[in-house]
Length: 369
Image (cartoon, rainbow, N blue to C red; front, side):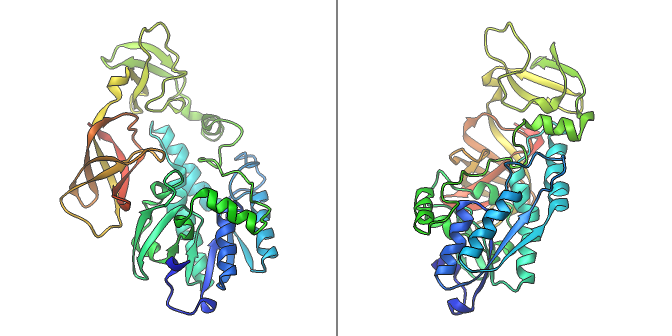
């Protein structure tokens, strides 16, 4: 718990813990309580019983709220539920639908952290006079009270810094990630030691609001006008088929393209929303050395015009080496040492120097080279 680095005696520190109802945040809350901190549990309510979203197995739905409450009751600390349904729908789900409708690849977990979690929930924690907001993310915060830096977790397989790149410096100064120095197996063992009822609860899925059905079913339900028929063309712009809506496709997709009779497998190379076209080609056509990243959030003190570092374009990818060149304060050109595939507009590109997170941004649709 040393990385809480608060400047008061432990018993005088009020710590708000963002509790999703899962094992990670529950362990973080109980560890802090047992260490003598004044703990408050906070859970976001993101869904109601309407038919807008199938929330039976979603994060921060009814069963998760109850699980968080039970942990708080058993270990004798207060728990509050914050209704953020409208904010979540407007900032996360609407953005998800709009991004897919434009032929881009959204990452709702980042949007959730960027909006409801680290704005609305963080502000609620401050209104409760909490000295810090703790989450169950697998990441490490290193630094002083007013100069924190973000680092990858000890457990590289569970590291979640890719989803945290949009965290601002001010937010990072207030946040704490005590599980960053533990592996997932160690956290499960601690949960068993505490005899938590959620000790065997499975991890939440990546897109929490897409449960039983696929994401395109959700988009079809909420934005049926997205299903507009169009052409499938090859890299030479020759029409070779048709599609029933670009929301059914993502860059790098190989299955269910709807084109048969080719010797080599076809992949989605590009989605042209303006022309309502799907461009397909072979795997070689997917390879890119350079990517333009916009809307940069830079959280490191390391900042030169040119920086040798690594980058991730997918959460489950190992950082890939390359070089940053700043086109402006808000645009980065990153050139990979080795060609990458599956680079898709709308995805995040996150930059690392060793384990330190330098910052990141969003892949620009117009300038993938």
